[in-house]
Image 1 (cartoon, one colour):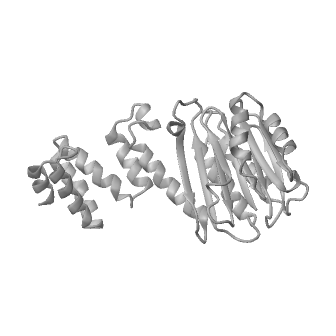
Image 2 (tube, rainbow, N blue to C red):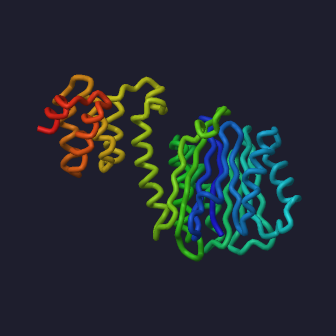
Image 3 (cartoon, rainbow, N blue to C red):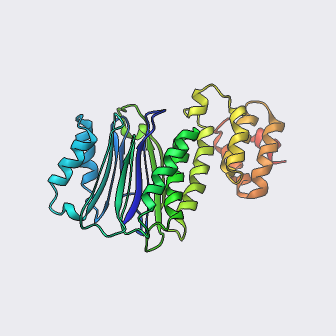
Length: 298
C-alpha cells in the first residue's frame, strides 16, 4: 500500500527508486537496485522475493518487460501484487494486479515507471510522472526529480491511510565488483508524521556531505575543497560535522586562523566538539598535535 517511482537517469545512466507508504520501514522492503543492472520496486501485498529475483534476471540481460512477465507468471497471487522495473537500457515495465486496492494504477514513461495502490485519488501516479518529466525538461538533477515526483503524489493525497515512512536509493550506471561501491544514496525515514519533507531534508544534508567527498561528482569535476565548502554549508547550515572537519583540515594544513574560525562555529553549536578535538590530539590523528589543539581551543 504504497506509491513509488523507478527510473534511470538518461543523462548519467544512474538508477533510482523513491517510495512512501503508511508502513513502518518501507525502505528495506520496496526498493531493490544494483549498479549497472537496474532498479525494481515491489509493493502492494508485497512479494519481497521479486526484488532479488528480478535483479538476478536483469543481471542476466533480460529486459524489464521480460522480468515483469516472469515474476508475475511465477507468483501464486499476482492479482494482489504491484511491481515496477527499469533495466540497464532504460526500458521500463510495470504490473498492477487486478485485485490491488484502489486507488491503484501505474504509468510507464520513457526510462521510468510510477505506480501506487491504496491511494487517496487516481491522480497520484500521473502527477508523479508529470513532475518527473517536467524536472527532466528543466534540467533538474536526478535526485531532485525523484523528490519532486514524491511531492507531487503527496499533493494529490498520497496514501489514503496517511504517512509514515519513505526512502530514496540511487546507484551508479557502472557495474561494480563490490555492490556497495555503486550505492550513491540510500536515505530512509522509517517512522515520521510527514516523511516526504523529512526525506528531502536529510537528502539535502547528504548532498552537502557529498560535495565534500573526494570521490564525489564535484571533486571528480575538478572543484577544490575550498570551492565546494561554501555551497555545502549553504545546503546544510546545521551540519556541524562538516564545519568541524573543515576546521581540522585547514588547521592541519597550516591555516590555523582559518581552522580556528570554522571550529569556533562548531564549538558554539555544541561544546562537545571541543572535547572531540582534544581526543584527536590525544590520539595524534588527522594532523592534530597537542600544541595545535591548544592553539585551536584557546
